[in-house]
Image 1 (cartoon, each protein chain N blue to C red):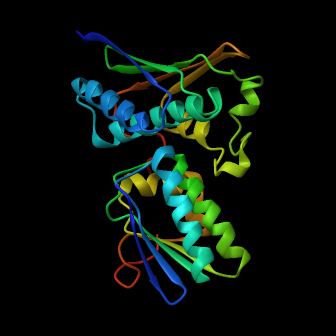
Image 2: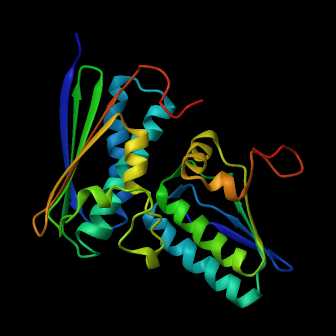
Length: 111
Length: 148
């Protein structure tokens, strides 16, 4: 259930797991924060391609990482979120502060 | 006319049981023939309530959480009960973005999600006795209030 992590230069891409709740969020958060520290990460892409469930714990992950990146002048982006995930992103206000793409950024318009 | 049916789950307040509770409730709910969106809404609301019991009610201690579901005609009712520390000020706890644990990545949106994704929510709580969250959602009546 663990997501995958890819680093290219100072950009981190996080492949989010199938289910994001309080249980899985604990591991994801500590993994990402370790990678940010170890690699001087300046921007993060959260890829929701495999994710079918998320609750407010996922919003906690996104907002916490957004604060970290924003502080250092970096960026956070959300890609490939399905309609039920996008509903949660919209309701929580995340779409107002982060770039959220339905597909990959080059293939589709920003929501 | 409508069917009536009940179920009750009791499980340890371990975070690995959050997924178990969601899947069980979703499976029980299928007899109302819900849309995928309705199932997703109930799973999210249930996940918030169970997480609250684990994180806030029991503060990580391993005790019991009870989830009871009822089908009343076309309405799905779910109650989540714990016997944890309870909530002193329910009104404040339900304010969006309010959290007693800002350091631990809690977004403060749990109750806001429950209110948004269900039709009604009622919270009863007594300090040091526990908390009961009762939520209802009518199934099969079309669009949710947040769908545009």
